[in-house]
Length: 296
Ligand code: ATP
View 1 (cartoon, rainbow, N blue to C red):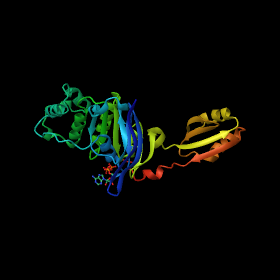
View 2 (view 1 turned 45 degrees about the vertical axis):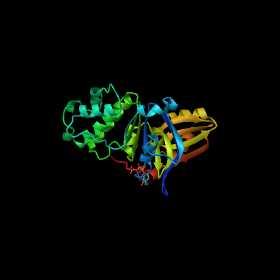
View 3 (view 1 turned 90 degrees about the vertical axis):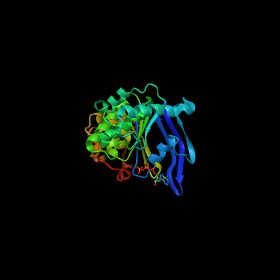
View 4 (view 1 turned 180 degrees about the vertical axis):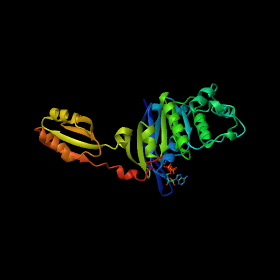
């Protein structure tokens, strides 16, 4: 099922186009990263599909329209850290969240297990570290057992241990079959946590698809010879060729960065094959990534 379809979404602030004619489809069960540098339109996109920000044009559909205008009940979101009562425990705070969400069976103990806060269930919120506060915010988004979770930069401001913990929690939530949509400016984070990614810059979508295909360091090669079967056999055992797909009368390869056209040509030639086509595709997105933080 399509969890979210966005078609032609545009949002302007004065003469700034925060989101420009955005088209996206998010499948159920994916961990979908929206990756882009600061100011690229990630928060505006999330705010729009949550109904907090009104788009200038375009539209979006949640859950294939299954829930009509009750869709919001099935989405848990963490856009900015919510306010919690400092002198109350996480249990009490989540009970209040459940009350606001009109959720009669909030399963608070189960949620506190997921976010690694079960041991602190009765401590006052004011005694929490920043990382614990962020985990409680994730817990609040989980109240009501939503099918989709939206997280805007969920690891921002956390120390390395806190980052690792939140990433683990996200994977745990995904493991329960939930769909997760998260904004990030950290390439490494999206590579580690997400199954799918959309890369945006200045409101424009640069690429979207499976993380392996979009963010891999592999280069793509189109190659052909008359005896395609034999060429495929040779390539299958050639170090540096990571995958082979047949596309019509050509093969499409993912090869490691160090692979050269000469090496492929020589392989064919040494085995009595003449290549009729050989094209190494440059990584067109590479320069776009330079503005996106690669580290933690
Ligand atoms: P960040 O990671 O820094 O939050 P982002 O990718 O989430 O960045 P947005 O916050 O969506 O980006 O901002 C996109 C653009 O729209 C930016 O140029 C920003 O300055 C502008 N913008 C966002 N909100 C407003 C607003 N309320 N009024 C005017 N301009 C805005």
